[in-house]
Length: 380
Image (cartoon, rainbow, N blue to C red; front, side, top):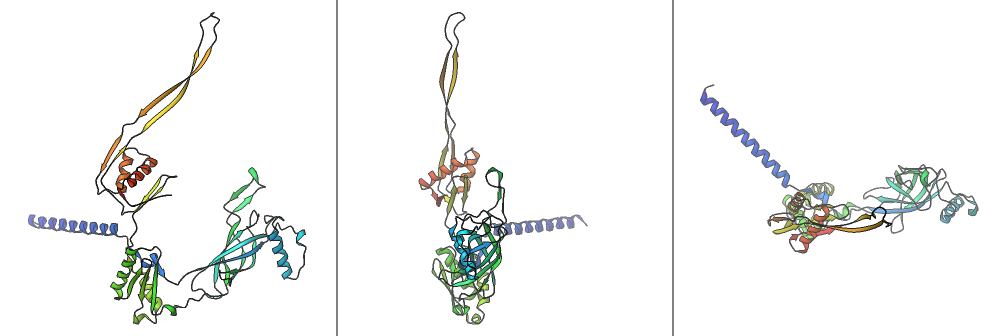
């Protein structure tokens, strides 16, 4: 290859390298600036919801870790259960250490049918020390309207234990008075959730109401399906189901959930004074400010002085305590930040001059009081 050919080849390689770098740079900027998320993650179809269920029952088969005879409700429940089986007993003679009264809770998901299984949580309401290894007796689970929607029964697993006889000689892991039973309840009644109600119109309910986010969701849907969506209010977007999707609403909802939008958030700085943690959003801005950070340290100590008499002077030893005060005024550190600075710049600058997390929190509060911090300051 001659000299001219080598020069051309080097120039081509240089152009290719430059082009590749520009592509990589462009990709990194896109990924860094992108905060898009699916509609599915910030909104749901209105009317598609879960329902809470609750019931009262007994856990049996415990190894002496159940309720004591002081729990009258447990003793009465045992008596009622045995009476239902045709066994009459005197509840005053019961020693229910192998039985515990519990509250059973569950969530009934949407679109479940009779015969489906759901998970349950079992929690002791008496003075039982553990319900590990017990079995929940058949317990009806009711909704807020008083109707029974599921029946729970099965072995209870707590994932914890209690060993020993109490005091310093015992050991405990996790919470042995709360357990779970996967698929422990059978659905006996279905909540009406027919998709026919949304065959022509549906509404998307935002998990966090916001004017800008609702408008962006409507715009994103309209770009893909035409003028079918409208933001009715900050928390709801109404959508008209296109005619060609009327017989396949599930596919239409699935396609809506897969549309990406960029949600908008209120500028906020969250401060945890107990741990010194500061969490801030990326859209927080600060006006041009000057911060002076300094410290005044006052230390008071007592020094003991002993005054000994001269030999053979018949004097007495005198002990006195003298207070000593020391004052240290640290050199103030001044920081000037432009109006383009954000809270991240402020925190970084304060860290560079040795400010503690508690100092930073106090300074942020002062900046907010001065009106220079354009964000909500939430202290938890």
